[in-house]
Length: 468
Ligand code: PHE
Image 1 (cartoon, rainbow, N blue to C red):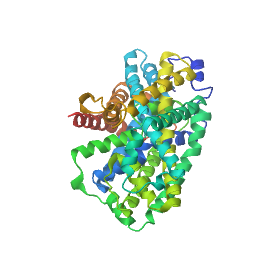
Image 2: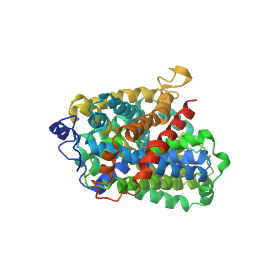
Image 3: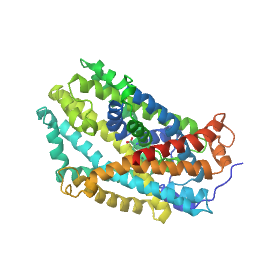
Image 4: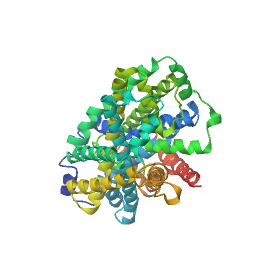
């Protein structure tokens, strides 16, 4: 028998929070939404340059190992916590451990982390909107090659356009969240995710047919273990967590919307497989083009905004408009399905905790996010606030570091310790087996090996390594 878990917030309140829907309407919709959360700037902007920098194929092998062993363990844990409790991050912990309300601070930590990530995510997503616009109106195709660096710097350090793009992106997110789970997130994800796949495949085909493309594939897939440093291992594990959207409670919120009979293991496999496939395809789309046009593959974070426009530029005006437009649209779509998941996690996390409705919470949060986003955007190198450098770094770099490297593994560690050592094992098994209906021969290895030891130890090592 399924043990009913006492809910922290009343069912009517929960209904209002989810905007009169029970959650996702179908397994497909749920997988698309969760895959949409996972597939984001991390896959298209960050994964290729991390792989390129830390050993190509060697980094890829390690990434796959981390994603399927540690990332998926966390993903499954969050989905179980969410569906079992029926709540988003903060109240989920309070509900599962009603006698120990202090556990809710894990959830709160995750939601605050989501807030910080989303503020910087809005800024970078705004940049993708600007580049999409500049691709389709032909601005980028008129820039002389070699000056893309200067073009990017002057855009990112200016005041008007980054601000306008930030506001537009935040408004789109808010509208989708206000439409609710089924009519907003699920509908948008079901439409945009197949579009994203089509765009990335189109770009792969174009990239692979460029002369000299094979050099890019060699760079991405050739395993060179001598490039794999300790720093690289940490960066790759961090990337695996960030890419799967795990550790910060977003997947707890999505788990609470999953249909009850869903096989969680199968859903987690699909989400992980989609996320990984898009990351690899993005690498295949980017590196051959970079090599074919003689660009620097170690362009790092600037790769997509500096190197790629000049790649598209070399394809002529029409090529630049078409492929540049398609690429930045792809990036904006990927960013959108991830950012709505972050805003949903924040809205539900704070809303359930404070008892404020969905509309009010998402509005107030959006205002806060935009204000913080403005500070971050103006702190970019050369911007209005860039001379303010606590500890020698701009605020932009501080937020980038905190939200990308330090906070996610910390939240992930706390989550997995709660799940493995404080949540009753029978509850976990009951939820994963759908009350004994599914085969769970893998449960012993998952619980006693991965959840209790491998995942927490790996996270601890990453954190210690990262901090020191
Ligand atoms: N997974 C997203 C990406 O790859 C980012 C993200 C992190 C989204 C955490 C939600 C929660 O870009």
